[in-house]
Amino acid sequence: MTISIKSEADIAGMRVAGRLAAEVLDLLTAHVKPGVTTDALDKIAHDHIVYEQNAVPAPLNYAPPGYTPYPKSICTSINHQVCHGIPNERPLKNGDIVNIDITVIKDGWHGDTSRMFIVGEGSIAAKRLVQITYDAMWKGIVRVKPGARLDDIGHAIQTFTEQNGFSVVREFCGHGIGTRFHEDPQVLHYGKPGTLDELKAGMTFTIEPMINAGKRDIREAGDGWTIVTRDRSLSAQWEHTVLVTDTGYEVLTVSAGTPPPPAFAQP
Image (cartoon, rainbow, N blue to C red; front, side, top):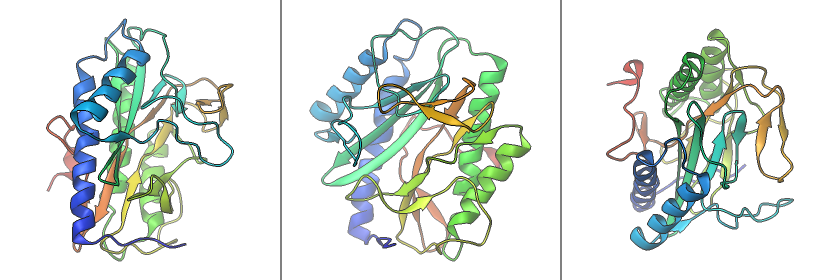
């Protein structure tokens, strides 16, 4: 495993890409309401990234080995969809939950982030899942510092999640990121503390736990991309791109509308 260490110039580029990705989510927030289609959200995001940010939507035509090219500019995963949901003409309904995942390439650097949205009035159970998943992401983020181990992140996320009665998807994980969409290391959202690679200043990676209300088992839908819960229980995900600093961490995917950290992660 070769984990790249970013220079100050590299980090400056990643801050810009991360901010732009977060600003797309800011823009979409006002549009996520009952009746809107995820196709419409995709077009809003695509046009903003290409024509306003002069950047590239990384998911469009992305084709890792064994996959057909991804056909849209964003991922929209609704209710029991875990990740990689493809925007379509289905209108969002009151009570739906949807993850919108944005990756922007600016000047060769990738910024990758996702947020959960509750459409209209969500159920108490849906709101709790969304909040616990957000807190779980931050339980992992606050473990980031030089000298910590990758599995310290995963252990913190898994422990918190399971204590709250939810399950962690294991087949998908966070990842290193920079000039490539997916780099080393893999960042698992479960694990044994004190194991795997040591964190060093200059590493950049995503933390993006996928948390299910039911069992952790998943399957692939028929489109070759969308992942769903096997028991059709709700699933939620949040994602930030994080830099390991000399003293701790910096979240790179921040903008004016980024939700604030939970109380336990405040300075």
